[in-house]
Image (spheres, rainbow, N blue to C red):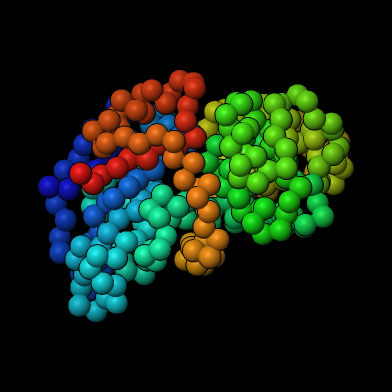
Length: 296
C-alpha cells in the first residue's frame, strides 16, 4: 500500500498508509523514484509544525496510470511536489515531464531551481554588477548556477564550511569566502540563502549604499531581523517564496543541464531511514541535501 511520511508532533514521525483512488478526469498516478530533503525548511516544519504535516516537495517519479483524457503516457518520468511519499494522484497539468536524455538527479533540481530563479528575478542583477550570496546550501548553490548560466559572472559566496565553498566554486562562483573577511560596501546585489540571522546581517553589511537584496531563505535557523546597515545605507530588501512557472524553468534547464548539479545530492538513503536521518540532520555537520531512493 502507498505510504507517506508525516510529522505528528515536534520531531515525531510516522508512516501513514494511503489508499489512492483511480485517477479521475485529467489526473495521473505517479510512483516515486526519488525525493529530496530540503534540510532547513523541512527541519523547521518538523520542529514548529503545523502538526500533522507532510514533509518534502521535491520529487521525481514515473507515471503508472492515466485517465483517458490525459496526454501523458504511462512510463514517462515527471517532476512533482509530492514529497516523501511512495505514490500519489496529480492533475496532469501540475506535473512536469522529463525528457529521456535528462538524468534523474539533474531533473530533481527543477523545483528549487525555479524558486531561486524567481528570487533572482526580483532583484534583476545585471552582468556588470557584483552579487554576494550568503550560504552555499541548496538555495545558494542553485542561485549561483542560475546567475552564472544566465550571464552574471561576478558572484561571490559567503560560507563557513570549506567543502561547501569548494562546491560554490564548482557551480560557477568567482570566489567563496568564510564570513568576516570581505570589505563593506563592495556588492550591488545580495541573495540571502543562509537561513541564519548572522548570515543575513553580514550580507547586508557588504552591500553598497542603495544596494538590493532578496531573501530566499525563511529564517529556519533563527529570526531574520534588519541590522543598522539596512537604514544607514538605504538598502532595498524583498522576499521570494514559491516559484511562478516551474514548467518554463524546466524547459530552460533541459537546455542547460550540467553534471555538477548531481553534486547537490551527496548522500542517498532508503525511505525507512528518513526518521533517523531527520534526527541526525538536527546537528552539524549536515550535507547540502539528502536524496531518498524509493526504487528497489
